[in-house]
Image (cartoon, rainbow, N blue to C red):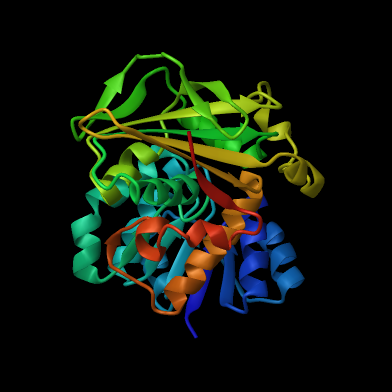
Length: 328
């Protein structure tokens, strides 16, 4: 059985991923920098643990020597992705994470050829919006195989976790990143667009999401722009470290997520599709655990890959109550 290391296993989402992988019967080791927090999760799931920081390449090589798959749940990811992804390639360990930060995807794209040569899979964003929107776009492309433009939006409902808020505060900037004529481009365009999440058109604001990288890597769509519609609590302000670890189970149940995709072809024809699923904090651990299980079972292709590319457009439908449909 493959050995899976969960780095940041005691975080809000990391703990849920640990639980999901335990339910799936996987051979896991929990890891992180804080020994006292790690001991709690270790004892809860009765699994081995490893305490280490990311400052020593030699130490990382020793840790990963006998690890088949590592899933990085430790944000802010701009501090953890680079040492772990590079160490994974050097030690022939498949790398996954749950980052929504563009840094993870820039690095995976840059290391694609090196990872292929080493036979190592790089899958940042193995859950969350990358899985949702990637699968939805692949679903919509069955109706329009050669789109030239994709506009995608995520409806975020409910509160953020403390870790997500801290990570987001590290990379939020007024400059937007879009894909134009196949190239990543900075823009200050703040024009809102309307999307249908199943209850009519609503305004969505432009944001920089990983899909400007992942959708192009998977589909080679020339123009890609990304948006978000937030309902419920706005982005938290003040002392982020004092926030609760994350929304309660009931709060997650009360706040489902949706995604919408608009594809356009060279003649101006459009295809619209939407996805409805559980709250993002419920989707991510389930999708991440399923991705790890698939990889542990040998469903692996080296290099920078996305969940929908690896596992197909129906991958997200493994999440309970998830639906995808074409809309007018």
